[in-house]
Image: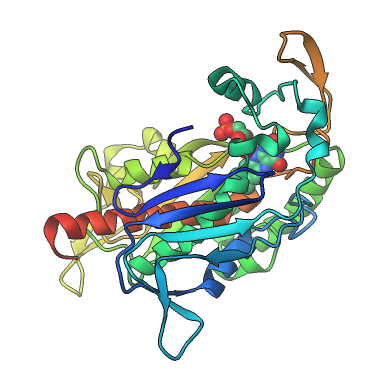
Length: 365
Ligand SMILES: Cc1cc2nc3c(=O)[nH]c(=O)nc-3n(C[C@H](O)[C@H](O)[C@H](O)COP(=O)(O)O)c2cc1C
């Protein structure tokens, strides 16, 4: 199976399956001299970890990351690692697989999941937890994203869940401090309470629901990207679209731009105090002509409802016979929650990649 690598200069390759011994990856192209700790990678991983609340899958994984290569310990500190410029190898053991949960879908295709398409393509499928199509793989991306955040000095990336089903947050209530106060990474305190009742209802029915996640990157230097085939927005969209269950990506005001006039949409400029232009709005999401402007980079992505649900659904089996499918394995009633740290990591990797490409081409930052 090819295509397990993303990025041009900050290149991440992942390996492993949901129900194998371990998952892992290699970050190649990370510059030497970047400092990070395993502890900080762990903090990002803990945000994605399953079983954090009753609203995420009850699979219990410690998701402990090991850094196997590409670093030296800083003198006098076991904790601080310094990259050497060689491939950084990451490994996370799988400890809570329950493969028998999946025996009833061994030859049956879950509607909405990758099962059918996977079989058509490869002719062989690890049905336990979805194999490579399982979002378990995204844990490695989160660890890689932790390193990417360190590549660009001053980069600060945050994500929030802004919609579950048709229940959107009130943007006037947006408070970044709230996202750590509820199990949803929700910046609107009132909506977080409403989501609790709503998602409890969905969870108890054995059903699932979709969501929208917003990622905001501050501290992105102006000038990253290129006007056509290496647009920063193009690569952010591609990175986000590669996350399991993502069905749509928007940059800035996204699809709303289609409803606006030129006067409403274009971000007007005035002379800023620091000699750089000051934008009076940010409909562009911090990117113009594929190149970052120095404003916050804003991206949103929509995830579909989890397809492994407890309700009986019509399908076919590998022999083409009509069957009913009911998934017994543990699942996330709304994958949007755990997609927040994954989205942050993918945006971090895209920005680090473009930072290195920009430096390579222009010799400056
Ligand atoms: C964090 C996260 C957790 C997920 N957990 C599940 C799950 O428990 N059950 C499931 O059917 N799909 C889950 N998915 C979605 C599937 O991995 C995804 O729908 C599947 O690979 C098919 O790919 P596609 O939806 O991109 O077409 C999850 C996705 C994410 C981002």
